[in-house]
Amino acid sequence: MAAMQDHALVKICAELASCLSISLASARRKVDLTASREEIRDLEGRKAIAERLLEEARSRPTEGENTSGSQLDRLLEAVASEENFMVED
Image 1: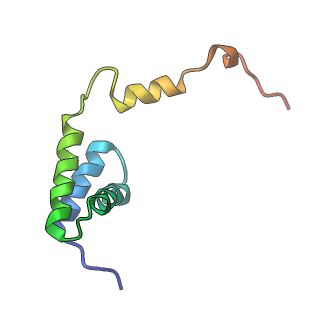
Image 2: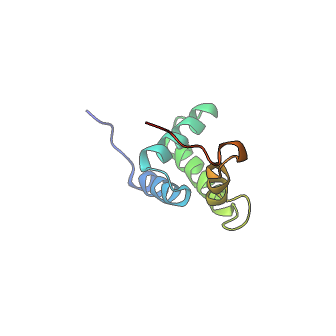
Protein backbone atom coordinates (compact mmCIF):
# COMPACT_ATOMS: atom_id res chain seq x y z
CA MET A 1 0.00 0.00 0.00
CA ALA A 2 1.24 3.50 -0.80
CA ALA A 3 2.65 5.60 2.00
CA MET A 4 0.62 8.49 3.35
CA GLN A 5 1.60 11.84 1.88
CA ASP A 6 1.77 15.05 3.82
CA HIS A 7 -0.44 17.71 2.25
CA ALA A 8 2.00 20.54 2.98
CA LEU A 9 4.92 18.69 1.37
CA VAL A 10 2.86 17.86 -1.72
CA LYS A 11 1.81 21.51 -1.99
CA ILE A 12 5.40 22.76 -1.81
CA CYS A 13 6.48 20.14 -4.36
CA ALA A 14 3.64 21.23 -6.66
CA GLU A 15 4.81 24.84 -6.45
CA LEU A 16 8.38 23.70 -7.15
CA ALA A 17 7.19 21.69 -10.15
CA SER A 18 5.29 24.68 -11.48
CA CYS A 19 8.24 27.01 -11.00
CA LEU A 20 10.68 24.64 -12.72
CA SER A 21 8.19 23.53 -15.40
CA ILE A 22 8.58 19.87 -14.48
CA SER A 23 6.16 17.20 -13.33
CA LEU A 24 5.12 16.75 -9.73
CA ALA A 25 6.82 13.36 -9.64
CA SER A 26 10.08 14.93 -10.84
CA ALA A 27 9.87 17.64 -8.21
CA ARG A 28 9.26 15.06 -5.46
CA ARG A 29 12.16 12.98 -6.79
CA LYS A 30 14.38 16.08 -6.71
CA VAL A 31 13.44 16.67 -3.06
CA ASP A 32 13.96 12.98 -2.21
CA LEU A 33 17.39 12.90 -3.88
CA THR A 34 18.51 16.04 -2.07
CA ALA A 35 17.23 14.63 1.23
CA SER A 36 19.10 11.38 0.71
CA ARG A 37 22.32 13.25 -0.15
CA GLU A 38 21.98 15.27 3.05
CA GLU A 39 20.94 12.15 5.00
CA ILE A 40 17.63 13.67 6.12
CA ARG A 41 14.85 11.17 6.70
CA ASP A 42 12.16 12.98 8.66
CA LEU A 43 9.16 14.77 7.19
CA GLU A 44 10.06 18.19 8.60
CA GLY A 45 13.52 17.97 7.05
CA ARG A 46 12.03 17.11 3.65
CA LYS A 47 9.66 20.08 3.92
CA ALA A 48 12.62 22.35 4.70
CA ILE A 49 14.52 20.99 1.69
CA ALA A 50 11.50 21.47 -0.57
CA GLU A 51 11.09 25.06 0.63
CA ARG A 52 14.79 25.73 0.09
CA LEU A 53 14.66 24.33 -3.45
CA LEU A 54 11.55 26.41 -4.15
CA GLU A 55 13.26 29.60 -2.96
CA GLU A 56 16.31 28.79 -5.11
CA ALA A 57 14.08 28.24 -8.12
CA ARG A 58 12.24 31.51 -7.50
CA SER A 59 15.48 33.45 -7.13
CA ARG A 60 16.75 32.40 -10.55
CA PRO A 61 16.44 35.05 -13.23
CA THR A 62 13.21 35.00 -15.23
CA GLU A 63 14.62 36.95 -18.17
CA GLY A 64 17.98 37.14 -19.86
CA GLU A 65 20.56 34.65 -21.00
CA ASN A 66 20.40 32.17 -18.12
CA THR A 67 16.72 31.26 -18.25
CA SER A 68 15.65 27.77 -19.22
CA GLY A 69 13.80 29.12 -22.26
CA SER A 70 16.87 30.87 -23.63
CA GLN A 71 19.00 27.78 -22.97
CA LEU A 72 16.52 25.67 -24.92
CA ASP A 73 16.58 28.19 -27.77
CA ARG A 74 20.38 27.94 -27.95
CA LEU A 75 20.21 24.15 -27.99
CA LEU A 76 17.67 24.15 -30.82
CA GLU A 77 19.67 26.43 -33.09
CA ALA A 78 21.02 24.72 -36.17
CA VAL A 79 24.76 24.24 -36.47
CA ALA A 80 26.15 25.91 -39.60
CA SER A 81 27.36 22.61 -41.06
CA GLU A 82 23.91 21.03 -40.59
CA GLU A 83 21.83 24.02 -41.56
CA ASN A 84 20.85 22.74 -45.00
CA PHE A 85 20.73 19.06 -44.11
CA MET A 86 17.97 17.15 -45.84
CA VAL A 87 17.06 13.49 -45.47
CA GLU A 88 16.34 11.71 -48.75
CA ASP A 89 14.04 8.75 -49.22
